[in-house]
Image (tube, rainbow, N blue to C red; front, side, top):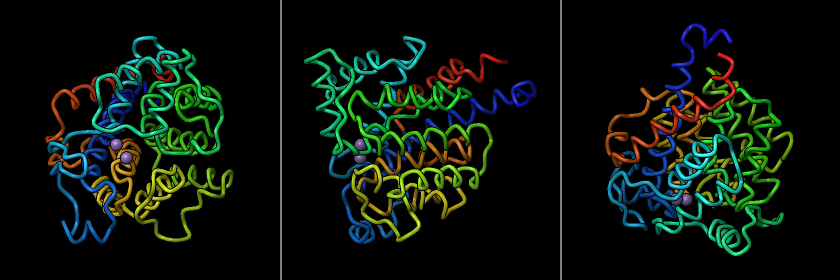
Length: 305
Ligand code: MN
Ligand code: MN
């Protein structure tokens, strides 16, 4: 692996930190305007571009929500077991729910409750469980499986996803996000990421994001990812992508979180505005940075160095 021999390992770790901080920053930025329409956001902020907290959850400035909270829980489970394990993930999600998170989706709550009742860390397939809850927390899988073959990435994705969301549309969209993050970590450009989005659209045409501008996106994974792709591919910086997507309102903390993890991998941590990063809570910022490095160390890409 040439890019590791010439110090590329450090570059990958830096970009992994970018992805994790990008997730947290996008979550915290978007949460302020979650469930508002673009018109309501314009009336209140003209353009929402600063960490202010507030929103329907009455957050402190820079406070993260379930998107980052569940990713950190999943990351802890991977670091504790050395792999992506459905049972360990379910246990970590259950712990997280026990600590009374500020928000939690219905499908997530149902999945965790089912695990507590049955001990089985996998929901039955359900065509309605196509919310964005499995995707919003997937980043640790992208980091821990970097360099693995696609079958391994896919299996790890499904192991964590099916704890709460067992749905082929969710699986396909989340796998595409994992591949986009990994491609960004390895130095791929926006065109390489767009090619992965095109592959997803070819496989699941419902993801076609070219047709019309997505506004006020719901928590349906297809709505969410159309918004993410439009913002990512219509802009050329981390800041512009995030501002574009959160100002579309709707499930803005989650479009922000997913755009943030991909854009953070693509552009790297130094492109994340410091006025956003510095408002993250200290323990969250440190956990993101530490997990990013530790998860990449576990990844196959590091084992070959
Ligand atoms: Mn949230
Ligand atoms: Mn959300």
